[in-house]
Image 1 (cartoon, rainbow, N blue to C red):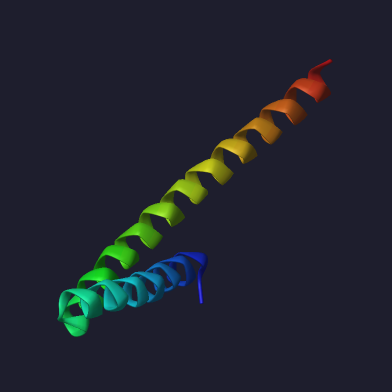
Image 2 (cartoon, rainbow, N blue to C red):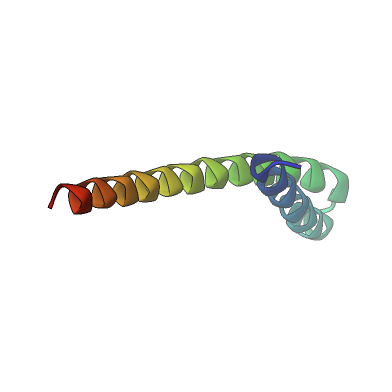
Length: 72
């Protein structure tokens, strides 16, 4: 399973659990779980994209530092 899949699935599971709990209090656990799962999956996917961007920036910095080190 890729990092993207893992983060999206983790978000969906957490969102579904939280949504079910809130839905149970409000009177419809199934709907709460479904909505929470969708929101959690979206959050997990967005988090994955953020982490990929962060890693890409780090790798560009490492490459720039190595390039600068070899020119000095």
